[in-house]
Length: 209
Image (cartoon, rainbow, N blue to C red; front, side):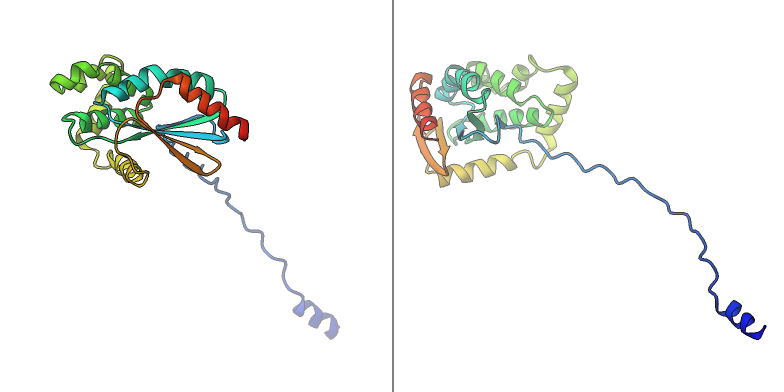
């Protein structure tokens, strides 16, 4: 009897069940998309395009060469395209134009607004009224956001600083300038390049990949 009492005293009480609260983890924040970059990350060739919004040759490149490049090579996964800002000091309004384009990028309208700025270059380059030209192609709601960013966003020029530093490293001496990157090698092409010439060069590089 005593032995049974000792066993009973030494037997541990069953553990109490405690409620477990499961909290669903917050979804990770989506990665910020680089609005200056288009095309497949797996593309064998990357073309970096340095432009100044007030540069007439840059306008010609943007309107005459890039549309075919995008259609035939970027959209087909062969080329990734990166826009880089390289505002030249002799152009009075180009920094403001760059701010408008990059502000538009923050609201998802980069390509639309960059295209409009280049197309209307002859107008705003005379009077500096970039705002009026941008307002022609975006909604009033987006325009409010763009204006606020242009006015007060202290980090809006950060990508420009990076682009200019890279341009200096690439040895830029004019705009437009293309940097064609293939197999880790950077090849600089100065000036306005007709699409036919660029196409021939890209095809040669693709044949080697």
